[in-house]
Image (tube, rainbow, N blue to C red; front, side):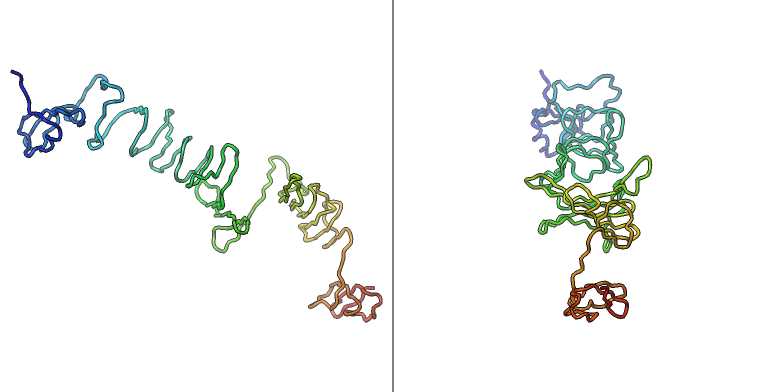
Length: 337
């Protein structure tokens, strides 16, 4: 006569009113679909019995492989009945790792690509990244609304109204700056992130061997227009080691069309060479002073003005000549002609 054990579904086992007696065996008929051991044994205490099988045994000294009978079918634990710890040398995952990973992650070369202590990743990443990135980024960058901000393929930046450059470790900055665009006025603004502090912009020309000449440009601001005729440079501001040039030109820089500010405080208008002006104001050409109908307010010694000779006639010339230049000697206006 065959020996039959107490049996039933896993739901019936879980619904037992009293714990199985010591040594009482229970066979679960739907163990495969329920994801439990097929056989349970009672100890008089556990309300639903104790599983008999791998989940209830302590395997040691196994000299071989543990392999399921079917590929990608059997599970190790369930969502509600998990293993506590696994101690292995290597894990090869074909699909996904779901859950929390604690500790460092290394690549095949044994290099740490994720440092758990600092929370930093040092590796090439393909895909999306949420959070801060310190280091090199290769590829495109998108905003939270999926708007493309940096086009990695075409090396362009667009759709950005504000740029904040914050000081901090590994940023190369020791101050905070911000750049933003006022869309109403179409003006780009450059500001300092510290209250009541002025911003600074630096143009740096570097030369590995030899000195940069005094006449060599250190930095330039170029002004260009673009229309149906193409792009045309219309002006520039250029700075050398000893002077600054302002010019409105057609892209062909001619010293005869510059205003030059020399480092000694001298100013030249036009000229044939980028040399130091001969006087504090050196004009290579004709200067015009408009005739004045009244004496300038608050004159100081050395002022020169042109009197119209009629409504303002400091030398009482009676209209001869009309007008004429006058010089202020500290007391009165004196006719120069």
